[in-house]
Each structure stands twice: as structure tokens, then as C-alpha cells.
Image (cartoon, rainbow, N blue to C red; front, top):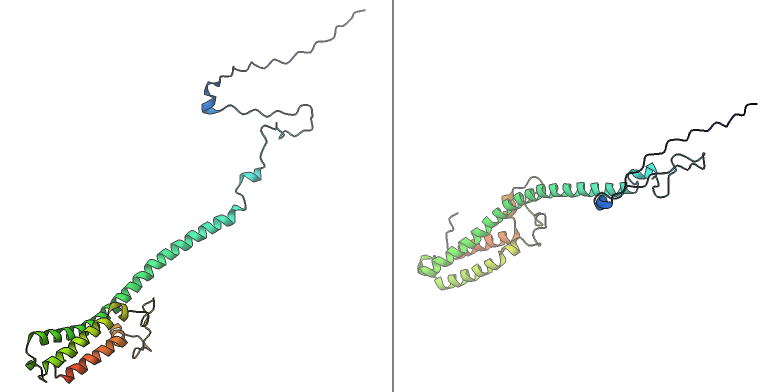
Length: 216
């Protein structure tokens, strides 16, 4: 009887030897990460299971964190608000400056008329004979004009003319202007200023009292 020898199974080829590790460039490129190993002892294990050294992250964690959305929204809203305020501020500041400049120029013209008349009157009295005045009582006129001029300079200063008593922060007047039910001319606002009206009347009264022709 012939005896059969058991068939010898062929062994799988051995993997090629790994190249020798060279730590020279580890500080530059870093060492290679460890490869995931399959759990061969447990056939039912998932192919996605890896060694503890290289855990896989859930795909949902790679996207933006939902908790960051309100923060990003606040950042964009704040930036838009800031840009809008800057643009509006520039626009309305320019408009306010334009209106305030015109009103300030008209009020300044009225104040300049009062101070100019009193100042010119005082110069004339101080440098010429009092006989040129209608009353001929030059010393008394000079004293009264001097007192009026000093008082007018105090009351018609910029701080008082444009004080909070007469204007608010938006250059809106708090005094009554004739005909302000409709469109009001800036020149009418300047003429209606209480301090301006007071001193125009006072200068005209002084001129009548001492017989001075103001030329109008």
C-alpha cells in the first residue's frame, strides 16, 4: 500500500524589510504617525476601528460648531451697525455744519452791526469834538456809549449768543421766530434772536436820543 505524505501548504511571502529609521530629520518633518491596525482576532470588528493612538473623529465635529453661529452673527451685525453709524454721522454732521454755519454767519452779522455802530460811535466821540453831535453834550454821550459798548461786548459774546438758553445741540432755536409756521428764512431767525433784538433796539434808541443818524 502506498502511503501519501501530507501536502505542505505554501507559506505567504515575507514582507520586505522596513528601511532603517533615520532620526536625522525628525525635528524638521516630525516622526511618521503610527498606522492603524485591524483587529484580526475579531472578524466582526469594524474596519473603521483603529488603534487608540489614532482615533477617528466624528465627521460632524469637522464642520463649524453651531455654537459659533450666534457669535458670527453678532460680529457681522456689529460691523454693519458701526459702518452705518459712521456713514450717517458723516452725512448729518456735514448737513448740520452747513446749516449751523449759515445761521452763525447771519447771527454774527447782526451782532457785528450792533458792536460796529457802538464802536464807531465811541471812536468818533473820543477823537472829535462833541459839537458834531446834535445835542452838543459830548461827555455825557461818550460815557453812555462807553457803558453800552462794554455791556454789549459781554452780552453778545459767542458763549452767550449761542448758549443753551437759545439753541440746543441740533442748532434748533428755542425762541419764537415770526412766521415760523412755514419755511423760515435763516436771516429771520438771526433777527429774532432775543439778544440781537434787544441791542438793535437799544442802539436805535441811543441814536434817537442823541440825534445821531445811523444811515437807514
